[in-house]
Length: 155
Image (cartoon, rainbow, N blue to C red):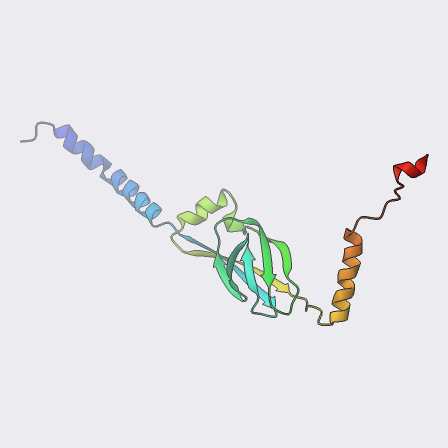
């Protein structure tokens, strides 16, 4: 005994719409994920890498990242000059605002890989040359002598 025959008819008429909405919601939950990685190499390899003052490993190294933009990069290796620089992780087209929403709706894993390569310069091994550079830098840092006369001598 159905007291409301129109209610049953209404549900029957909207079953197709409910199925489509459920399907779209399910696809939304299956949306793709994004894997962002920075690959850092150096010549020679084996340099310790710091990204934004956080040690991430030795080259070659691959690290995950969240945000695109400019990173402070430091590399250190015994026998080589330390390298302090900045490098930019640029967003590819499918990661641009607006487009990224459409790309994320596609149920697939998307990997973005940024590659940076650095060349380290050997440290000078000649002690005399190193002492010469130190003396040169010291003269640049020391204040120039100023002419001062005692106050009693100026009378």
